[in-house]
Amino acid sequence: MVALFLIGLVLFVWLNYRLMTQVDYPNIDFGYFYAGGRVLIQGGDPYNVPAVEAIYETMGRTRYDPLVKAFPYPLYADFIFAPFALFSLEWATTWWTIFNEVCFGLTFWLLSSTLLLGQKGYARQQGLQFLLVWTLLFFIPSRHFVKALLNGQTSFLTTLLVALFIYAQVQKRYELAGLALLVGLFKPTSFMLLLPLALLWLLPSARRRGWYSFIGGSLVLALPAFLLNFNWINGWLAARTGEGWQIVQRIATVWGTSSALTGMVGMESGFWVLAIIIAGALLFGTWYFSRKLPALQHSPVLSWGIIATLSIYLSLYAFSYESVVLLIPLMGLLELIRHSPHRQKTLGLVGLAVLLLGVPWLLFPLGTPLDEISAGLFPLSMILFSWLVAAQNRNQTDLPPAKTDAMFSAKVVGKASLK
Image (cartoon, rainbow, N blue to C red; front, side, top):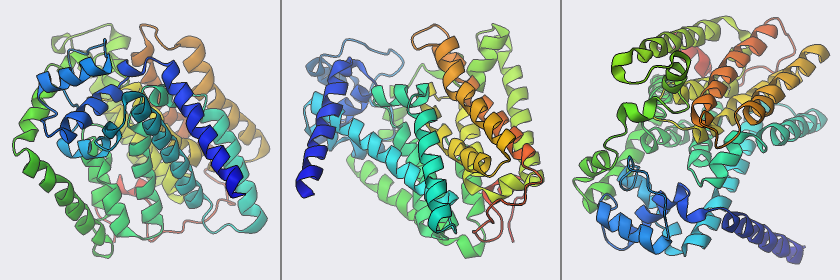
């Protein structure tokens, strides 16, 4: 048995190595992280452009993004990439890909454990099989998964941390929930809606331990960063100079969607007015439906998944690979669909197939001019589809009961404090 496991492990690593060496790995996004980690372990400043460019030369990188001059994340994020930078680029890319796949597996385990909480025996086994089969069928071939994996992005890690927060709050392990919210510091722009709402949920005294762990974890991250480079914040901001409106008009967010729909570019053009209207409608809808639909109140996975997806969609800076977070509302929807009548179950599965597979690959294949902008339609569609399925199950009585204390996060949107 041990021999078979070792053979399987070696084969798994070899397949990932073959996969990543078949792509243009020196020029994928992981190269930014690898270069930043390499400079850090050499004792340099990852925001020093000449130092980073010197690493690019040794990597054989030929694609340069003029809007990302050096390491693109806060300095404490570089602590994650530095261990990978100890390896050669091809092996670092391989280990990072495996790390992302492990993150995906752990995310599935955390979410399925949360969704099936309280179910035992055959019912739990049946539910797990349903979630596993349909998650693999819908998500592994999806453009979000493929693009994030082959580009070596961080979306699997951030999605895992959001799933960990959901799992921890259901298990009433508030210290762990607070630590998971450090995802908001790892990618501040992407989680600028999720982080304050989650911290608000942790505000009551019974959950305030989550605040203490969040503050403690923040200090553990920040102190070493400031000891290494007291001026790192200025270096980080300077490394991203020039993104601004050049970026938000052509990415997978409400801003890119609005620019594409109106055909307008530039702050003075007014496309942002439509973006604000759409954002306001989505925020109001999330608040309204979280108070009216029992299906959302019963499912922390679906309610937090909607909030996380909305946070990404309203971000000023989020590319299509961030849509890996759609895994969370997807699994929440699958569990809700599993408890639906046969006709609604069929329609729900067909709708997910069209949303995640049909439209992205048939209408907007990778590499087309609308690739990034069109990807913003999918978080938007996932939110709207979630509301639709939850509304169809408004009167359903066989949903599994809520297992956490008081209210789920969906009601956080509707109430500023929880008693």
